[in-house]
Image (cartoon, rainbow, N blue to C red):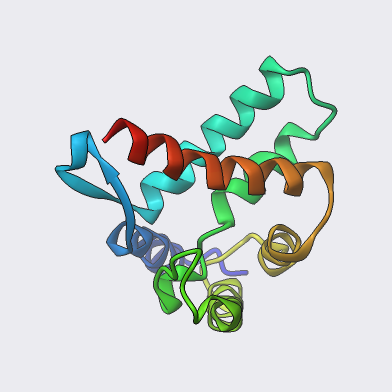
Length: 145
């Protein structure tokens, strides 16, 4: 970890690249598609809301962290549609992207890969909720559009 302001700034700009990854989810009545940064924020808020509303026995902190980092690998790998035939291999490119971000001099989140791996392969209550809501939101958007 670096306390160098230039390194931190460069890392924050690397994370900002998630805004450039477009998904297939239509928004605003079909006028545009959602980007992965918008999706990650919406997923975090939806998971938090559902966990509280249903009084689920989950760690909200862990849930929010998982939601915020779940698509970081797309910065390098791009978005792979859930039903794409290449979906089975997409996690490898995403994993490498997360490792690159974790190793960045400006990153202070040392557990980035561990958290990403959990959301990708884990079976915790937080991961299960995340997976359900991650599939629910595009469905709701597409019905609304």
